[in-house]
Image (cartoon, rainbow, N blue to C red; front, side, top):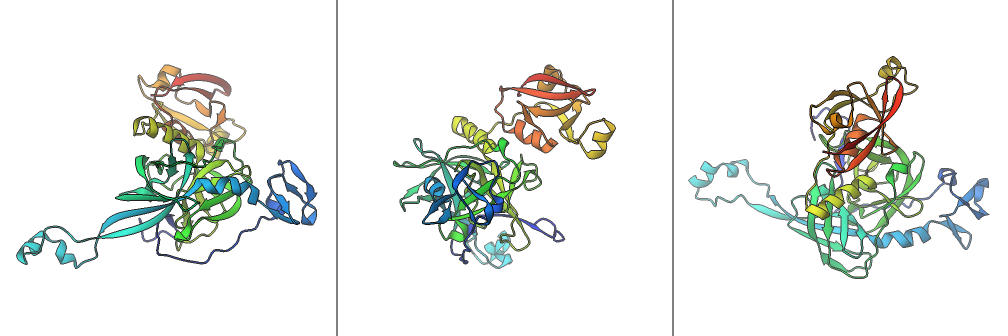
Length: 381
């Protein structure tokens, strides 16, 4: 933990598989069902109409039919690593070790931790998970929902987005279809699927609590989805799905004083995860896209001074000479409010979106200049 005075911990969720705690069953109050979903023919208790993904079985409302299609694509990951064994600090002193004729090699011990992953390409065996789940792994074992176990190969990982891509050689796999995380709204129903505390596959439900969260990964490319669906240690790398069973996030972290769930969990948006995965699969690495600008978030005071109706977007404070931004015609004072037609809320939002795009891609920037909207085309550098 950085800074002993901090009141909260950002807890990354890889966990030793030996830990166990009880699981509480989740229920779905009718009041949290998205109002835009097509209602089913039966009326739910309390006067609410059950949404189309809530189906009845002998009078019981359930999301089991949706989960039947999604759970087989979520896997358990066992990670074997070597760590330095706890010893007397004097044994770390080379002079002390030579004096007592001790081996130069510092004693190590083997540990096994547990995480989760999501099959996103059944034909090629690609599995998405978190970078922190597989970091420093010497061996990776993946267990499917049908209890088959395979050794996984690391294709590549990206610490700055906390995304890693694994591959297994297996047949009969089931994949999760990507959803469009840019279309999420606060209040949308979500379900988190993973392997908390090494217990095995577990499902919890909730809603999207907030979007565009930052500050979890220093110097990272962040645009986290916040959810109150229970996410616990071991859920890292698992799936966050919408009501149609589409993958809209990779569960990554929680905000907690003690390391357990308090209803504040975070997931990497599926669009960022997919962009990173495509680059890793294509080249084994991630190349950061750039525009060549210095930006800051439009605050309330700044928006008022600029005559904006609301504080949105990222204002350009500097344009680098010879940069893609300069070639596109961006100027100091321009406010970038959308990329490819999708709104930009903060500077972190813009940084995460551009930074995970491949170099050479053309994007359409919507900017405000002197109160007028303009459209500029830029090639990511």
